[in-house]
Every structure is written in C-alpha cells, then in structure tokens.
Image (cartoon, rainbow, N blue to C red; front, side):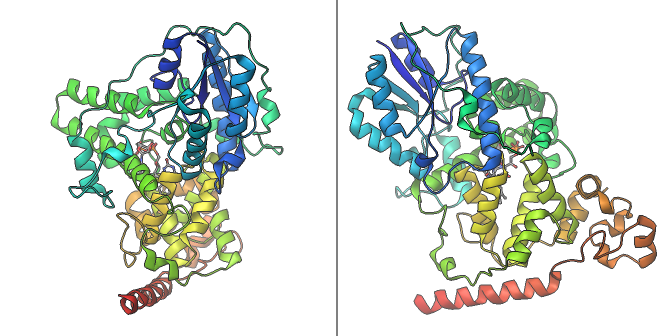
Length: 480
Ligand SMILES: Cc1cc2nc3c(=O)[nH]c(=O)nc-3n(C[C@H](O)[C@H](O)[C@H](O)COP(=O)(O)OP(=O)(O)OC[C@H]3O[C@@H](n4cnc5c(N)ncnc54)[C@H](O)[C@@H]3O)c2cc1C
C-alpha cells in the first residue's frame, strides 16, 4: 500500500511521526506542495521563502540518503493531493498537523474530501493544544498556569530516529525542480542570511548540540545579552520543523539529569520554560484564531494608532536615532533574525514610542524574519502592544537607552550593527544626543548627518502613549 507523505512544516526525517506511520505501511512518496494561496492572509514572507528553499534542498538530500526522493508540486492541496492519489495509485495521505487557521482550514477540507484516506499526526508541539485546559475547561490566557499544567501532563514521547531507508514506489510521479518555485530573491540580498544560518535538519541538530555543549549552562543570564551567543538559535529550525521540539526538550532534560548540578538545572529549566512559551503561543492561536489580525483584548481594537509612513520607515530601516533599536532592526534586515531582548525593545518602541499598531510591526517581522511564525509572532507583538495573552501592561514602557546600558553594557552589539557610532565612548553610546560635542567630534559623529537625531523624545513619547491608553481605558469603562 503506497502512502503519500505530505511534508508541511515538518521538514525533517528525524523524529517525524508522520514519516514513521507512512514507512510502516510500505512504499512512501514524499511530497511538498508549494501553495501560497493555502496560507490565507499570511503567505510566506521574503526571508521565510529564502529559508524554505534551502530547507527543501536539505530535505531532498536527506531523503536521497534514505533511498527516496522529494516530489515537489505547485498547487493548492485540495486539488493537488486527490490528483496525486489518482496518478500514483497511493491509498493514503499522511501529514503532520499545522495549527495556523488557514492551514487548519485546508486540512479540514481535505479530511472532508478524502475521508479516512487522509491521516493527520500531531508532531510539531510537545502537547496537543486542546489537551491543556484550565480547571473549568477553558483555554489559558496566562503563561504561568499554562506552563504548570504542561509540566503536570504525561511526558511527551521520547524522540525516534529516522528509519535507515524508505521503500520507493514502483514508479515516481513527476516533480518540479525546486528552482521553479521561485523562492529565492531575484536580487540577491541574502548574503547575511547565508553567513548566519545552515537551514535543514543537519544544521538544526548541530545547533542543538552546540547549545547543549555550552550556552545552556549559562542560559538564565546570557539569554538576555544580545552580543553573546547565549540562546539556542533554534527558532527557524523549530518553525520549519527541521527539528522536533521533543528532540530539543529531551536533549536539554537529559543533560540536566546527567549534570546533577543545581546551577546547571536552574539554567536548563529556564530553557525548557522558553520551549513552553512556544507551546503557549500555539495554544493561544488555536483557541483564539482571530488574534493574528485582532487583539485578544477587544478594547484595544479602538486604540488610536497613528499612520505615519515616515516614522514606520525609519523604524524598519534602523534609523530612529535610538542605537539599540537601530541595531536590532539592522540585525533583522541582515540576518533574518533578532535577539529576543531586542525584539521586545524594538516592538515596544514601535507600539509605544511611535504609536504604530502592533500589526504594522507583526507584518514587517513576518516579511523579514527567517523564523516568522504566526503563533509566536502574534504572541510577541500582542505582548508588546499590551493587548494579548499575558501581555506586558501598556503603561510599562521600555526605555531603549536604559535597556542598552543594562543588556549591552560594553556596547558590543550596538557597535557591530551601528558602525557609524562605534567610536563613541560607552557612556554616550546609547544616547548620542546627550554626548558632549567634543565626544561626538572625536568619534566622527555628526548628529543629523552621519547618524540621526532621535525621531521622538522618550519622555514626550511616554506621555503621549499613556494619554492614548487613557482613551482606551475610558472607552472600556464606558462600555462596561
Ligand atoms: C515582538 C516579538 C516577535 C516575535 N516573533 C517570533 C516569531 O515570529 N517566531 C518565533 O519563533 N519567535 C518569535 N518571538 C519569540 C522569540 O523572540 C524567539 O523565539 C527567540 O528570539 C528565538 O531565538 P532562540 O531560538 O535562540 O531562542 P531560545 O532562547 O533558545 O528559546 C528556545 C525556543 O523557545 C521558543 N521561544 C523562546 N522565546 C519565545 C517566546 N517569547 N515566545 C514564543 N516562543 C519562544 C522558540 O521556539 C525558541 O527557538 C518573538 C518575540 C517578540 C518579542
């Protein structure tokens, strides 16, 4: 019985339950469908498309090592998969479930059309989102009790290795060449991404090994320092399913057991807690599928956001005059990734200092992040905007100068990404406009010429944000 293994966001052979289910039945036809129309309002952005191209190339190589192939087709799943079943005589389609609303709707349509010939497997989360409920049976909106509940559940199954080979079908269906999908940019802007990343499961497993061998032991502290490689940098690999969360979870938990050391445990536990933020993001997305475009806290729909193209553009390009914000936005543009601490700072700056909607920020991240993930991105942006699950209170406004001084103490991060102010002394680096003119001259900085003046003054922006919040609170008060 030949099975079509429909790869979605599980682009790996290691610990891939859908692959194991398919392989157990006999010949397997691995398939990837390129169908931006199936992604609803969130088709892949530029950086994700670059990653996807390389992830698929890596998957082709892995499958070839198992004696198999990857059949690539363009076209919506609801028509392409029934066609492929007919064409190949395969009797089933097996796929790993996705949780984004548009992807889930496609799966529901397929389930209706194909009946029991379409089988879905949960494999990209540690816990099925529907299995975690409050005492009253409701979904969680706060992380801490959600995470506690996850830790009380039965442990996720241990990861399973890839089989040593996959049985080939009697004949292979036609495949399109990967290049025909046009995922790579026509003007090559991806040099920084190539230098920073190795897409594919081999790169993912290497990143996990490197993390467990070093940074995990210092994670609790160093995860907040953007100049240090203190985190796992697994987010794009997890997003594209090049590594399973179970593989990451057990690598860290096993190291924790082996070390039998309180300090190591504290650090490793902090990492496991971050993996549960990912679970939380998916839990919120599944139960509140409107949140990618509307705030979870409905009163924020009335927030008086500004629509000012010039300040949005300055933020996108990293020329706001706030060095930590600019460094983050330039790191994002160059590498397709930004450190989590800096994501929080730039998001807060856009939403609170500039009063742009969190959705403007979410859309820019969507296009530029290699780890753009509807669940985590929505969670992160609504957190910054104060309008989502477990969100930062709106009145808590990050001060980008203090954040830089605290988390980039020696200025290494800012100097790397904002080289035009690299020669400023540390005490002037995060607020060049306060530096004496002699220090500016010595560093070769002319504000407004070689580096911008701040596009907004922190104290004024803070007052303006609080006034806007008061409008929302008043509106809420009037309704309740
Ligand atoms: C405004 C904003 C937008 C974000 N957008 C995304 C996004 O599109 N995709 C994405 O994967 N993450 C997003 N994050 C979360 C976080 O910044 C990244 O997951 C993290 O920086 C990835 O680096 P890492 O793999 O080295 O993380 P590590 O610190 O090594 O963490 C391990 C894993 O845990 C998960 N994780 C860590 N922090 C979070 C978090 N706060 N929320 C959800 N999952 C988390 C990620 O899968 C990550 O790979 C966003 C955060 C903010 C504040």
